[in-house]
Image (cartoon, rainbow, N blue to C red; front, side):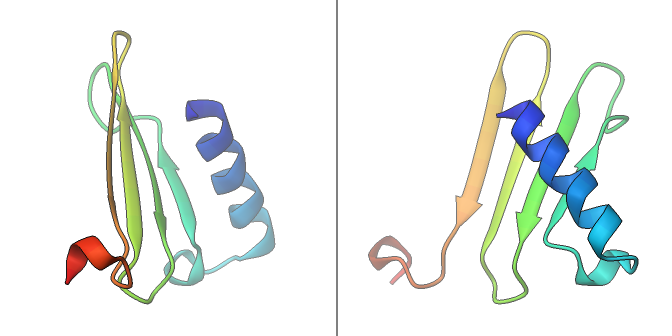
Length: 69
């Protein structure tokens, strides 16, 4: 998943010059030993994933999901 998010962020950076209009981002220097990838679509839906050498933490929100009612 880390490489997919990293690739999508790179492709998005190539296609969209302005950071505020990008859907995907990836921060390889998020902390000393962790990297963070994110997706946001501008409609309150988002996904954040933090990767460190031992594990991955994923947090996502879909405002149209039945669980968010």
